[in-house]
Amino acid sequence: METTDPFADDFYFLQLSIKKNAAAREAAVKEQAAMPSSIYVPLPVWKETKERIKLQMDSSRRACHDKSREWETKEQVLGHQVRSDIHRPREQLRMPSLQELDQYNSAEAADQDGDIEDFSEMKNPFSSRLWTMRQAVQRGYEALYTVQELQHLLSSPLIASNPTAHGEIVREIESAVSLLSQAIGIRTLSATPRPTASPNLGLLGGEEEQNFSLDGGHVGAILQTTIGKKLMTRSLKLLTPPHRWALLPVILAKILLSPPAADPTTASSSSS
Image (cartoon, rainbow, N blue to C red; front, side, top):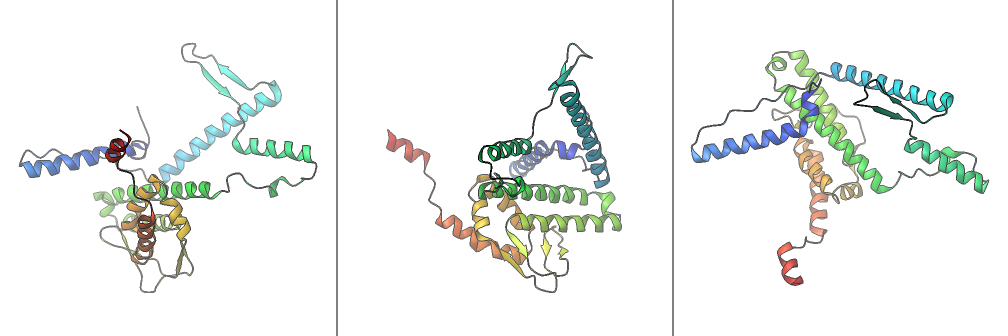
């Protein structure tokens, strides 16, 4: 299978392979055995290539949407089955999106009640705190994956020997870390000089102090899920020291106030 971005497409498999290789190398050092060779990790593609891939996907999606809309309006059918290959038929159906279904339900309710004319002022069904937390975790993981991808790209000898590309990638890392801090509940209140990247690719604060606020309820909501806890654990070492020290008391309070997890062995013995 050919792919234009093997690092991003096989990200999880690569991370698992890296962890297994690191564990095997540690075991070889302890047992004084033969050291296994390092695995090959492909370099991430540059942002121009990502933008080109995104434009191609948007163009294909737009063409498919226009064709399905034409089938619905002119041909009065939901879709069309392409029979170019009888062994591998492709079905393309025109299905309404969640937004269209929501507008349809809103219009139907308005027709029944007769007192709602502006559908844009109706409550969004995805405005709950749980949905907001899920969106924040999703944005946080996207920023975290961007940082990890740029870190791997920054370690390339070609990038290290090019000061212009090196500086641009460092700025991209700082921007991704800023998005990561916003996703986990940190809001910057005043403009301050851009922090500089440390040798271990964390961030060090600038000469001026940063004025920011921390949404403790937002942090607590993220920590209610396992995926949110993993996000916090992986994000702490990438944040600036002021943000890190502001998060730690909230995280510790949430952990200490949470009920202890039940021991499965104790639960099984008590049930028996």
